[in-house]
Structures are given as structure tokens and as C-alpha cells.
Image (cartoon, rainbow, N blue to C red; front, side, top):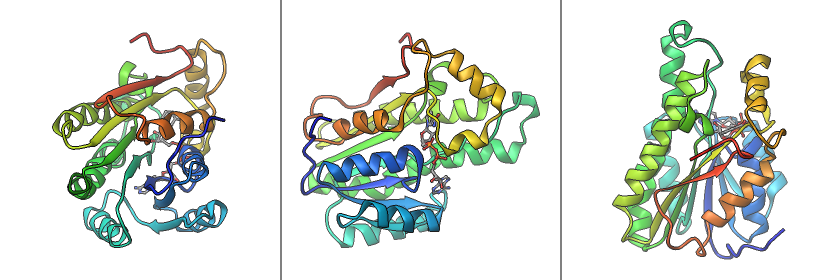
Length: 247
Ligand SMILES: NC(=O)c1ccc[n+]([C@@H]2O[C@H](COP(=O)([O-])OP(=O)(O)OC[C@H]3O[C@@H](n4cnc5c(N)ncnc54)[C@H](O)[C@@H]3O)[C@@H](O)[C@H]2O)c1
């Protein structure tokens, strides 16, 4: 594993209680960062904080609740500068044809996957601009580039997150705050429990490498995007799809 220097940096990782978020938090901690885990799963936050050590702290909150996000951001900033924000929390909303999907589930998927990263960015960007430094990494999905059948809510929310990344990246391009996103293919994490086996099989069949992505592989890309070495890239969309993406 390459050493990426995040000494002295503080990172908020949303959805850090499990899966890709927890793997990312581990990688950032091993690179020297102090991590703050934000997740709706209070027990998961406690377990992650214990597991990660190294000054890690946590906050249980629903990221779709703007007031809760503002409160958590204020509490985090009160303890020192926030350098890194990883918008990773997400849900699939299940699988069905578009016309069969429940409207409330469609809205909730967009709330968690797109509106929440907007809320966390809104709460933290002015602080990062004031510091003249920040790295925001949004975890989108290959579904946002290609559009997966039976996942229009998920695909649309992730396409929206890619658009948010591009717009915000340009707005902040001269501030020292860089905004990038990545578009992973499927990784076997607890999120698979939210999908049909048919859909999981479909996703694997689309990956030329013929295997699922490993969470630590995403974490490695995020760690670099979170570092000072990522210095001339903003509004970027990074592929990590085992060869699936063709653009
Ligand atoms: N695993 C995959 O196949 C895959 C592929 C592409 C993209 N992604 C994306 O990667 C990210 C992480 O996925 P994962 O596989 O680790 O999923 P996961 O289900 O294992 O973890 C998601 C985390 O987000 C948290 N969360 C959900 N809703 C929340 C809310 N309202 N407020 C706060 N926290 C909330 C959950 O409690 C959980 O800890 C997601 O954005 C997902 O869409 C995953």
C-alpha cells in the first residue's frame, strides 16, 4: 500500500459505519488523518469509532435533515478545521421498473444520495473557503453515467451527484477547495441486501474484469483525491469500474 500523507488533516466521512465508508475511514486514518464518522446508524458509528481509534469521533445523524447537518458541522468545526469531506452515504431504494417504483422511495433515494451531499457541502464549503483549503469527494456510481435498468431512482440520483460535483468544482476552482467524484461499479457490501439477486448478477455481468470491486480499492482512490497531491483536478469524475465505463 502506498503511503499518502494526510497528517494533520481532519476528514468527515458520511456513511462511515460500514462498507465503502468504513474502508475509506480506515485508509484515511492509516494515512494520518483524524476522521469524524457521520452515519444514521448510531451503533455502527460507535463500533466504527472504537475500531478506527486514532482520535476518531462520530456523530449519529440523518443526513437528509438539514438542521442536523448544520448542527453536526458546527460541532465538528468547533474542534478545529475540517479539511476533507467524503460524501459516501447512500441507499439503493431497491429494484423495480421505473413505473413500478414507489414515489416516496424514489424521493427518499434522491434525498439521501443527492440532497444530503448538497446539504453537507452547503454546511462546510464556506468554512473550507475561509481556510483556503479543502477536498470534497463524492461517491457516485457507474449507474449515474450509464443508467442501470431497474434502478432509475438510484441512477438519476448519482447522475445528479456527478452534476453537483462538476458545478461546485468550477465554483470553487480558485479557492483551494477541490471537488471530485468517483463512479464505482458494484462492491460486495451490506448495500447488496437492498438489491435483488437478479440485479446483482446483472451488475457483475457488466464488469469486464469479471469480479466485484473491493472497498479498499475505492478507499485508495479516495485517499489520493483527499490529499494535497491532488492539486490540479476539480470537477472530475474518476472511473473505478473494472473496465465497464467507456467514457
Ligand atoms: N457497494 C456498491 O456496489 C456500490 C457501487 C457504486 C456506488 N456505491 C456507493 O457507495 C456508497 C457507499 O456504499 P456501500 O456499499 O458502502 O453501502 P452501505 O449500505 O454498506 O453503507 C452506506 C452507509 O450509509 C449510511 N446511511 C444511509 N442513509 C443515511 C442517512 N440518511 N444519513 C446518514 N447515513 C446514512 C448507512 O447507515 C450505511 O452505514 C453509496 O453512496 C453507494 O451508492 C456503492
